[in-house]
Image (cartoon, rainbow, N blue to C red; front, side, top):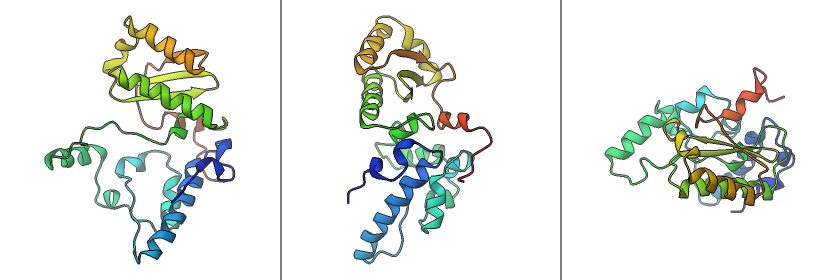
Length: 198
């Protein structure tokens, strides 16, 4: 199955319902495959923590009757990690990764080049030993989020200069640190109270 988000009408302009557009197209394609194999249900991996944030993709999940077993079981991210640890799964403490498009402020055009910049910038930080990272993109400015306990590591030399050099080479004009640290959905702060899908 091929799915190319940037080919979805309206997606690259990064509207506030971007995730809905993507999930709707993705699950429609999965439904075709499920029908071919006689599968009656499609499941996805959201959890109860996703209920506390703006998640327009969940509208597509509901519209297309996709099941969310972890949410329905009342499991949080912490619960899932703990159960995974008890089961001996190597991925129990793996970094969480979200769609790279979530690094863009709403309304900023999403391009392949900018997606590549963000991806390579985050990989740079991971390779340097930062555990959970986000590089949010605002035009040509990078806003780095790491776990609060690792914030000081961003400015300790020689890492600070290594980060600056790498990010400037990737095309970022400005490199900043978000003092709030890593948190999911930080771009949703720009939406205020207006999170409808009109």
